[in-house]
Image (cartoon, rainbow over all chains, first blue to last red):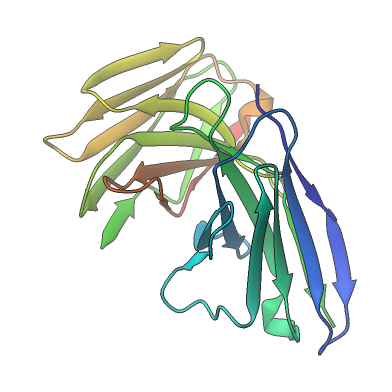
Amino acid sequence: GAVVSQHPSRVICKSGTSVKIECRSLDFQATTMFWYRQFPKKSLMLMATSNEGSKATYEQGVEKDKFLINHASLTLSTLTVTSAHPEDSSFYICSAQGGGTGSYEQYFGPGTRLTVT
Amino acid sequence: GQNIDQPTEMTATEGAIVQINCTYQTSGFNGLFWYQQHAGEAPTFLSYNVLDGLEEKGRFSSFLSRSKGYSYLLLKELQMKDSASYLCAVRDTNDYKLSFGAGTTVTVRA
């Protein structure tokens, strides 16, 4: 099946710094990637949709200047949390679509646990 | 908007059967997904329904009724490793966005 990786898996940063999270589709080309955020014992909240070569589409209430998304190639999308604050601490998950057994399926990365101190 | 409801928690015994219901009211519908998520891990795909009826895949089956806005995930012959959160997600009509329910935590006891 299709494999999606995320790096890093865990990161701890100080308040005010920026953190970059990478999402890669390892064995297929992802025309679309999605970024989600998940709080403990809560469901996934879609933050933005990223299409290769174009600007990301952000969901209502998500600050695009705070969560910078770049989808530079068909296998890589990055999410940068700028000027991180403790309330940004969360589990960030990406998914990729466009390959595998059907274009309708989203393949999820293993997630990145961000802790802002 | 999207409104997807599923029970918060369910408990069952090893070897038993558990049915997780999901009801949805969405502005569009282009398929319903079930995912399994273990604590601290990303969701893994279990099933996909776009037409009415039952889809069976080993110990897991998923049912959909579009007219009723209703789906269920049936887990048979429960094993301890099935203890996880199960997420119901609906895909929108015009794009490929998924809207997720809050998830149902299933605890399997010996």
